[in-house]
Amino acid sequence: MDVVLIILGIVFLLLGAIGCIAPIIPGPPIAYLSVLGLLLHSTIAEEIKTKFLVLAGVLVIAVTVIDYFLPIWGTKKFGGTDAGKRGSIVGLIVAFIFPVLGPLTILVGPFAGAVIGELITGQDNKTALKSGLGSFLGFVGGVILKFGVVVFIAMKFIELVW
Image 1: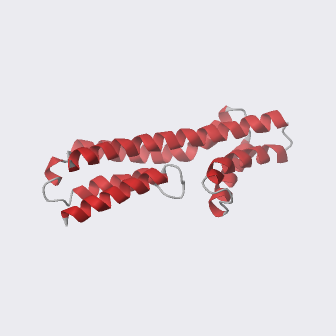
Image 2: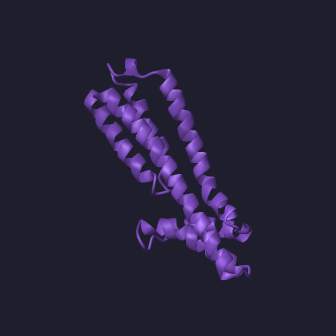
Image 3: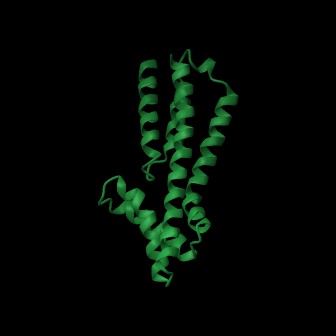
């Protein structure tokens, strides 16, 4: 049973890392499950500190919430209008549904959506491209934050198992 929990934990960590890039998979919450699963492990459970569980849980919740707003914030910060923000969201949704460029679609979708949203409302090309760049940078910032939390959890998992 203990070996199964460790293998499941590793699978959750891998899915968590993939979920940092693939927005349809909630990466940090899945990675957090790897450590929670160790609570069922006969000898490792006593080594897990409540302080770590609370800290990791708060980080997971915070980064998950922040991740939804970063592309919108980036669009706004780079001079985008509400149309750019809405376009960024639509682009992300379309990227989930039609991943025509594979994983790259998730990077291109919010950018293209923000640019198209700005152009539809009559913004000039420069404003539209800046809006798209802000959306893209917001998305990349979210990926970096999520990956940092997953690495933090993975390091603790490795420390506990080995």
